[in-house]
Image (cartoon, rainbow, N blue to C red; front, side):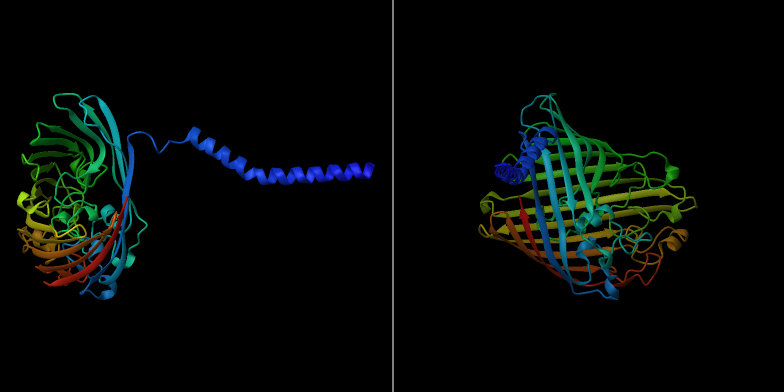
Length: 446
């Protein structure tokens, strides 16, 4: 009898153990779910939206040798890789609580994060021509993390509503943006590569009526989380922003005028060129300088085309002026213009084109001709630069949220193709082109 009881107890214990083992994962999952609910932010909060895209493709440049060191002036780094290259351009994630249309005191936020090859170049836009080289094709990877935006938005119920952004936000200048799928073309244009990417500071905006709105801001400077200047002898610096935008009564046309004035040398805002964005810094000596930009762009969707045709233009003019420690005053002026056209033939096929010109009164900005330091000391002037490009892009919206694009591009002008030597080496630029590009892109947005 005792043995039977013992056997029964052993069986019950074993059965209970098996039951507990079977139920343990379920209990653990329930506990984890409670912990998540009690201790973490609920992603389904009212008004908060998650969006983004994955952008990948293939590019082929029909120029370039020297183990990937060759580049094409005027192009963003990930668009100038020699020969063939598969690209993870970007994984973009945006989290936002936007302000509502109500004119009342309210607040929100937005955060944009980008991962991929574009992020590498947005973090460091210098190129292999710089005295301070940036990433090259042979050293590229898609693991870089770039914080594009992170700001708090506030509305003060004054007049029609006065809005503010406080934190890090994208540039107010330019028709093209950092998100490739939002542009008419896959590759970035010449003018885009000369304009600031982002600022850290405060930007206010006010809508006077349905046709006119404006912006005013004070920031650290172009592409900087610190002050504007790159020379420590200049002290603290800042940049002032202003914009005035006009919208046609029918809502089918816009004209945007954007200004920036920086109290010193901006951080690098382009591929190529000397130690600062707007010119050669003459060895990093004491510099007193300022930089100002004027950018005008507009677009028009003619009503007679039933929203199938979109025309646009983009222009820029900026000047850097500064006194070096020597007797020479270094001045650099850069100017450019671009025209865009896109026609949507049907729901799934479109064709877009872009033509651009970019020039300068001297080569201090680009660093592609001669020796800037020698030329500055001998009179402050080197030969100017003239860059041209034409791009044709076919777009296919095959299914919802999926975009496929194929592109052809040609660049030509003053010393377009460089073999990767420094700006002070006369052998750095070896050809005026033309430089040909072909590529394809696949984008899924959510």
